[in-house]
Image 1: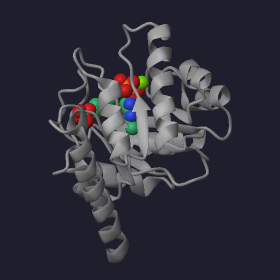
Image 2: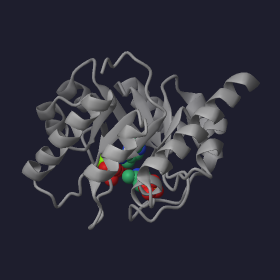
Image 3: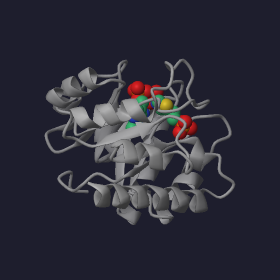
Length: 218
Ligand SMILES: Cc1ncc(COP(=O)(O)OP(=O)(O)O)c(N)n1
Ligand SMILES: Cc1ncsc1CCOP(=O)(O)O
Ligand SMILES: [Mg+2]
């Protein structure tokens, strides 16, 4: 993928929970048209396990023309030739991620307010993951949800795409786009869906419709 192309609006993140089947879900989501896959692996997995899974998924992304990002483990991103990575408060800082992955990589940073968003932008982030937007059971230890209003204020503070994350479903994704988010990132809305292909189609439809609607109302 050429990192100068616009970033996709639906980021599907692999589920780290026991019993999840990230390859099956990713294949369904990519076949349904998901433009971005973020490979997120639980911390207890070895680098070799993370590498093997990420290699499989980056190849799937290539097959479907999707962007492949790797959460946290930037050396794995480099090793498999992924398009970029995502880092948060406990990972390498964005400026260091840029040193590791290079000038053309897609690099996302996590933020919860406009000040942090501006700092990440200055540090070289290509996009921001902002949240948790809504309550989620997928990740423990998160602060209170910030809601669509705060996501909108973050989006207004920077000139890079803001991706809303946390508790996003087909019922809530549109609100985040209307508030100013470029797109959304989801785990459970696709991984836990009885039909991940259909769930992806529905989310894509909601997100694209909300983006068109926002474009018209500007
Ligand atoms: C798009 C997107 N936004 C936020 C996150 C969270 O990253 P981080 O805060 O580093 O938490 P972990 O995912 O590493 O547990 C994300 N992964 N993607
Ligand atoms: C990794 C992460 N960071 C903030 S919320 C979250 C998990 C989002 O999962 P879900 O889409 O199932 O709420
Ligand atoms: Mg992280």
